[in-house]
Amino acid sequence: MNRATAIAHPNIAFIKYWGQADAALHLPANPSISMVLDCLQTRTTVGFVEGLREDEVIIDGVAASAAARVRVGEHLDRVRALAGSALRARVRSENNFAAGAGLASSASAFAALTLAATAALGLQLSLEQLSALARLGSGSACRSVPAGFVEWTVRPDRSSAAHSIAPPDHWALCDCIALVSTRQKRVSSIDGHRAAPSSPLYAARVQDAARQVPACRTAIERRDLAALGRIMERDAVMMHAVAMTSDPPVYYRMPETMRVVQAVVDWRATGLPVYYTIDAGPNVHCLCEAAHCDEMQRRLGLLPGVQQVLVAGPGNGARLTDDHLL
Ligand code: DP6
Image 1 (tube, rainbow, N blue to C red):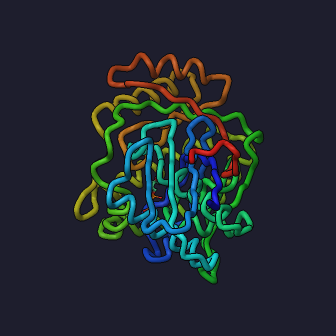
Image 2 (image 1 turned 90 degrees about the vertical axis):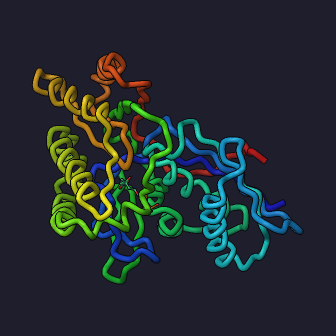
């Protein structure tokens, strides 16, 4: 069996990818910036097996849904095409966090799958090639291939990949994630991206996001949390405004989400430097410096509706491991 195992982490976007310039190529409508989240991880083993008739996909110990199997199979087809192989694969993947609840599990999943599958077939791709390939599985997955603070761009020739703008140890930022629900989200990001252009706010947000990218990059370079926080909160609100005004509308936020948001705003007003962002789900990511992390975790844990608080710092990129699942 040609086998390899990879570990990758999800990422949290400070400027988000919401809407596509090209759906087939997974090209985003605007550039985005994110941080890899170290404590959350996906580990995936891919083994290509002679004589296997179909790809087998097991996620967190359970056979994957038909839709997930198709999506993984299509990604393996891309890797097989690159390697000139027709072998089917066994895929085993484990997350140490709830998948599908807006914690970007597809990002870590497709980053790990891309690295494990290409390595299993003996391909040696550059970081940029791996990131571009992961993008075809799930857009945000390209940002889980490099380490630390990451920017995803589209070049004039329409090639598109993410690269690191600062390593994990550049800034001890802390993402305290207030989980208010771990239920599978009702509307996938795929459908959200598809609906986004129908919002009358879409063009304005895409333009603004692109305009904010240099300022966001500078805020990270200068470790300026206030500047980063302002940009990040506004983009999150605009992304959700686009989602809620799309046809059909998409509502990711729940009453508990807004309670956490209000608390973050109040805490900031009383001197605790913390800023929030929300992905395509109800959970709230609260960003602060490491020095305030314990206090944030404590306060979030006391809020009604918060089931759990996960804490993550800037993480490494996707990498191979000998700790196989197959
Ligand atoms: C809200 O990368 O999950 O998390 O390309 O369809 O797989 P697909 O979408 P996905 O979208 C992520 C949306 C987001 C914002 C972000 O991470 O930039």
